[in-house]
Amino acid sequence: MSIVLIVAERQPDGQLRKATLHAAAAGADLAAKAGAELHLAILAEDPAPLAERLKDCGAKVIHTLASPSFAHYLAETYAPAVAELAKSVGASFVGAAATAQGRDLLPRVAARLRAAMASDVVGFSGAGTDIVFTRPMWAGAVISDVKLKTAIKAFTIRATEFPAAPAGKAPAEVTAFSAPAAPASPTRFVDFKEVKSARPELTEARIVVSGGRGTKGDFKEVEALADELGAAVGASRAACDAGWVPNDWQVGQTGKVVAPQLYVAAGISGAIQHLAGMKGSKVIVAINKDPEAPIFQVADYGIVGDLFKVLPELRAAIHGAK
Ligand SMILES: Cc1cc2nc3c(=O)[nH]c(=O)nc-3n(C[C@H](O)[C@H](O)[C@H](O)COP(=O)(O)OP(=O)(O)OC[C@H]3O[C@@H](n4cnc5c(N)ncnc54)[C@H](O)[C@@H]3O)c2cc1C
Image (cartoon, rainbow, N blue to C red):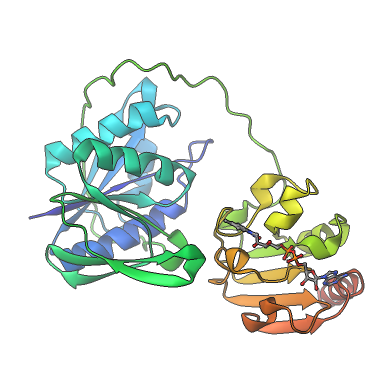
């Protein structure tokens, strides 16, 4: 039976990155269509806690790769190990979530396996080995269906397009794989400088409040509304490029892809590259003083007005309703 192998991902604090559950659900969907088994790979200094956490999410087998060299993610150590595991188990499909790590890792794994790759996949169709990978191109302006003709196929999935794999499935068999030592590399892990924030992580937040060039660099009201709602703060590239807010707040094609329950866009025009990162949000609220702004075409609720007037009123109304 063919195998779909999904690489799990940890956060810097060692906890499971939620996108892994979405990748597992995508892997299960692909496995059902391809008539394959779902396997997971966990690389860590001690993979046991994560294996326990993922045991009942639908995988048939969990491969644990334990080594001090896997304590921190490094493409140079992870890629050869994942490729060796894929070869050893005879995986036909190797994938991960299209996170910063997944985007870095999977192309290198694909190259080692001489596998063709589809990135940022949003759906699968077809059956058996004739699987079609659906993926957005040109900032989502085009949706393409691609077939990969190599024996092993690599992919990353857009986590916001798949539900999280539910717990409660039959427990997976957990098996240890000892990867051969990675070839000597001039790259080594030195330090991880985490940006500490009391706010939720942008890609995992249920609510995101974003500001654009319309803020003219004053994010006070955007941040105040975010804090009232317990939300993460995002921004357009124009706001990030101007140096008004940190680059890791950027939502869009070249920033982060988010799909929260509620996305509030204040002073953002709605350029296609911004929409590529947020149009999967459940409810979109746009505040813009230009009634013709393209953001209103994707908004569920649109407020035509000055954000410096609208945002405080919204915040007061929400505070009052609490
Ligand atoms: C290859 C490439 C990749 C890109 N990637 C990204 C990306 O990842 N993310 C991204 O965001 N962009 C990206 N861009 C840039 C994108 O094309 C736009 O330039 C950018 O999104 C515009 O940001 P903005 O909406 O904040 O600014 P603008 O387009 O200038 O819009 C500002 C809006 O604010 C409104 N406004 C002004 N004052 C007020 C006020 N007081 N109250 C209410 N509304 C007000 C205006 O009516 C206007 O609609 C990319 C571009 C390229 C070429």
